[in-house]
Length: 533
Image (cartoon, rainbow, N blue to C red; front, side, top):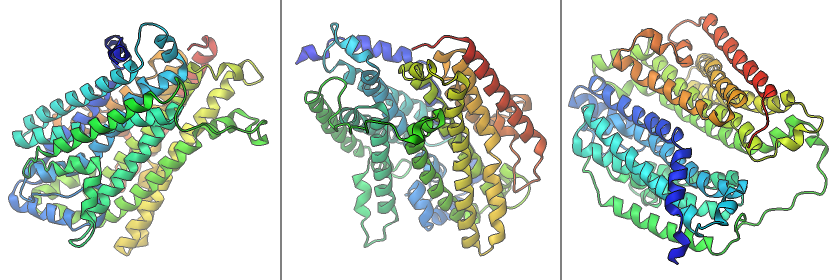
């Protein structure tokens, strides 16, 4: 049995080298989100009364409970300030764990690299063990950095460490889940999709449990690793014993993953692949049709998520006034979006976040170009009648058009739900426009990926790095009072703060032109370089 782990250390070092940009960038982005929330908390909720008022409003709003979870101690500064970040951050950390484990297990098998490595002195369990070590270490580092950072921002130390442990526990639980999905599916995309489906299911279980009344199924929160993270109750008792549940779950599930490794062949998944038709349908006779076929499942999933988030945010917008009770807090929230109402400021801020999330989809969809090239699936197309430009543009249309669809869906559902909730359907237009205005900045990030793919394909992670940098500038720039030129490096800085202010089309036009220039430069560079693996 011990021989099955031979070579684990070498694979860990290789994996860390491959992830030397992605992991620090992702960790930095999540920690910055936490620090931004913690740093703003004291000004938003300076008194116990303001905290109780905000917590009561949050706990009495079903949509907020479903989206973020419950505030367990209304008097706690940390509890009210981190409730939103805690819910969103847990999802981001779960996704990171899924990506890391699948990247170093199933993706390596799918590409054929793991079979070559396995033919040397590398044990059967080495790849899975190395992936889990990297994922667990990443979550431990993230938990510690988060705890130290938010404690330094002024939140109670004990609660901050409990908060970091809660996030780390969620990440470790989903690393275990990804270890199983990597054995079930024969493709990295399938394994990631299965892990994401589990994430969606457990998030819904947590939401149902948190929104259940005294006689409802509140126990459902305990069926979810996301729920376990919130049941740590940081800043409201710091229940460290919940960590034992997370560790027990991870040990059992990881043990199951190792058992599944024994029951399948290298390169195969336990879920049998479906045989495709002998001949391709007429609809697959173009590069765009193939790109659409490859990416439509992911787009539909993102579309459903954006439509659902839009409904929730539109409903919350009408109640935002109840979350801040003190004059200073109202003044600060208003300044986030301009000098007008809190509702408009909230809509502007939340749609800005939706823009960042849409950029994640655009980056992911554009990165499919590199995946197809590295998997040696692009070359058979390019040696035929398909030009390089047509092939790149086929995936680029999905990335750019898909990003637009996501923001349109969010704008439609948010506008309709906000109009219905407020009784004023005239609010639909401003909400919808605010969502669509984020699109030029999203396209700039997609253009960065295309440029990196064309000029230096091994550096396509530049898209993720740029996203994290722009996120840090947006979240910490005002708090750190950075110079305006530094904040102007982010394309999201130039998005009009509508509906609290007027729309200046000039910055939007410039952003579109920059995106076009980045894409054009990437296409030119790709036409001049060799195909690589």
